[in-house]
Image (tube, rainbow, N blue to C red; front, side):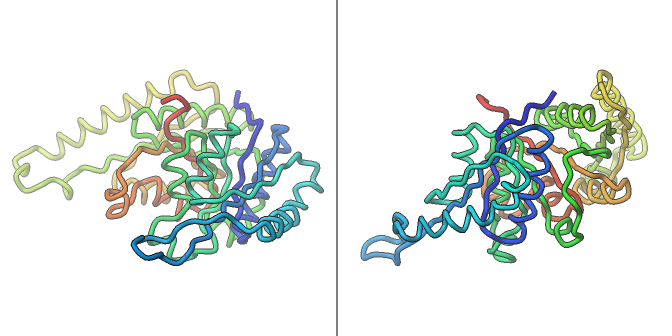
Length: 301
């Protein structure tokens, strides 16, 4: 059973933050959780002589009080729904402050939007959300742009949960989370594995391989591992094998299956690698039509 006692909900006062709070309120109502609404401000000074970068400074007391008042006003719908809630203004890099606060509470879940006031620039340069989902030890539930634009009503009971797996540790953790959510919601889980490396991807020097035979071997091995992964599932479960680019197949299946939620693991990757190529989780979080829950390394790892 999943225990959600504390939900951290970062806020930049955007519409995406508003919808994330709506989802947090729905979850808090089911689990009896307390929401911690956090705004992270990073006020810089212009570069000083001899210093190449802006120097962060403390917020003026008046600014801090104004932000706290705005947070309380932003949180009013949650309080009217009867949800226990705290507000906090932190100073420093937003992603760093969110991860730090999630550890300090500790938060059982972080709920946030995929876009904020930074818009397109953040999407290209690496958003706060993407940094958080890569570094957070707590599960992160993201509410993507398409879900906000479609006006999907927030809910805490997920009936159709898609769980993509690559059989590594993060995806095994995600699978356990998906099964637990399905048990509590009376829902079912579709476990998807995507085979990416086939004929079109094989380098020329491997052209002597028997590609059809290799493909049959890979498919048989993947189906066996899928069966093993769901053998002890305590919720209704289906398995699916697909081939192609992983994130495209995950998004396609999520749309066709009309998923309420995607649950997937996140691998730690270097900043340069992520900047140049992105990751499967990043692509899914950016473009999904439903909320996405990502899980990285558990606490203590």
